Amino acid sequence: MAQEEKPQWSEVLKRRLANSQTDERSEEEKKAEETELFTKYYTDWREGRDSDKSYKTIPRFYYRLPAEDEVLLQKLREESRAVFLQRKSRELLDNEELQNLWFLLDKHQVPPLSGEEAMINYEAYLQVGEKAGPKCGKFFTARVYAKLLYNDPYGRISIMQFFNYVMRKVWLHQTRIGLSLYDVAGQGYLRESDLENYILELIPTLPQLDGLEKSFYSFYVCTAVRKFFFFLDPLRTGKIKIQDILACSFLDDLLELRDEELSKESQESNWFSAPSALRVYGQYLNLDKDHNGMLSKEELSRYGTATLTAAFLDRVFQECLTYDGEMDYKTYLDFVLALENRKEPAALQYIFKLLDMENQGYLNVFSLNFFFRAIQEQMKLHGQEPVSFQDVKDEIFDMVKPRDPYRITLQDLVCSCQGDTVVSILIDLNGFWTYENREVLVANDNDGGSSTDHDDP
Image (tube, rainbow, N blue to C red):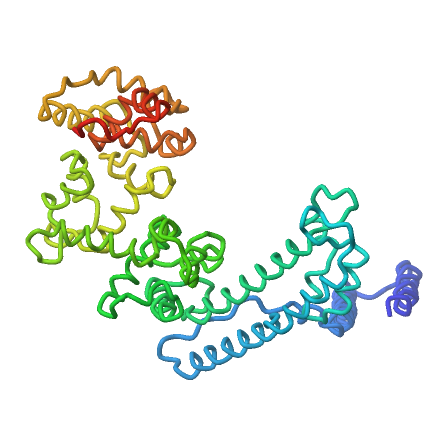
């Protein structure tokens, strides 16, 4: 079209130039013709440009969420999401298709064995991909093969490692779809109530929880949900991305309870196991001496070895959510998770907020001295000679090596990998005693002795 219009434009210009010398029209007439020509050619140009309507091919990227009173739109959105998730679920490999994939891989293994593992080369790998069906296509790519390639002199990959990779991907997608069914908002995250519903409905499918009384279900769900929110929602927004849930190991720990043969050690180390949940709740009940379902500051002071300082406990009750000055079970769970996981950034963030009394974003010598004075007072109560704060302060700054030699930030604590030791020195007499006697304890361990031969402070 542009080629057809070009002679027309050139002819017009030639005529205009030829007539410009002899044109006797008035300025108004010339102006009117100019406006007419401009309008004509501009209109022709716009109509030609709009004919392809390319701007209409831009996909829509914003969809307004239905308001609460738009019941029909909300229902339509829920149904469309359900259909979408069902379609995604049908795209996943089922048990029969996984068995067929394993059969094909085993049939195409390429000798020799690598140790005891069957191997497959790239040519055979592609052959299996062609026979396995369209659902498997995304697993049989050069990228996946290269990802699993490791030190085989013949350039092969392990059949078992590849199959485990496929199984893991299928499990992740199944779990993503399962979690998305509880995403009421449909925004890719779960609120606390959503996750509670998910775990509550998951309990009957976990053999390791068969012995739990139904009356304990609500406490178990609260215990399980708090771990997710304590570590995955550090800003306390009240929601967690489904992607974050899938990326962390907590869901693996929870679904490990499907194993009927789970060892006692595994159960004790798994926060989500029945023994672990009963332990935490039992400790809460034991601390609650007046049996009102809440913990006062005095009751909480007996937590663990009863060596947390009064200054630290004061800060806990100042900063954490309480009801008439007493702590409920949910707040207690955050407290326990912080103190039992002091190496973790989320736990350090929790404790750092308590130590940072003036909310300055750092700890200075005054802050350290304030909390360590409480340690010194406890040492006097136990008949011990108090340690000089100056020495402890120097050791703390040597351990942390902060960017500012006079201030310790949360980032400094996390990066130093000594944050758990530092906070233990400041809030817990038992933690300080362990640090002070670390060389003796290491020597006892090396000699095969027990570190419990001492009397606790």
